Image (tube, rainbow, N blue to C red; front, top):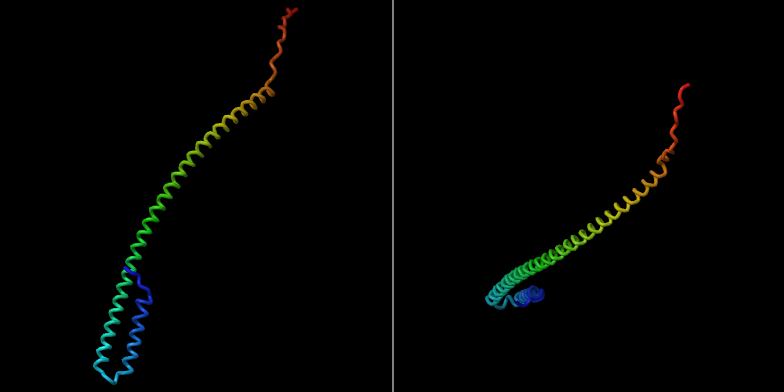
Length: 144
């Protein structure tokens, strides 16, 4: 269907009706029957323009709704694909971070354990009592 502009749909018919009304009023006293007939024809034409305008606007509205629905569906589909890709990438990233932080935590625990054991051993060496020196056995003297 050919798209009609505001000029073709509204402005031309209104201008024609206005001019016809002016022509009717100028020569109204000459032949009233012809002018009545012309007035009715103009009214019918005007009504036809109104109906055509309604039809055209309804068709335009229906087309707009249809195109909007199609655009909405395409946008929704594209958005869903983008969201799915984002979720997938986020999940992969989370798994890598979790794996990396788990390895880092294990290494931290291992290093901490080594430091703890070295420190504990050093403290024990520094604070442990010295081994008792061996003293020669004392001989008992007979009681005199």
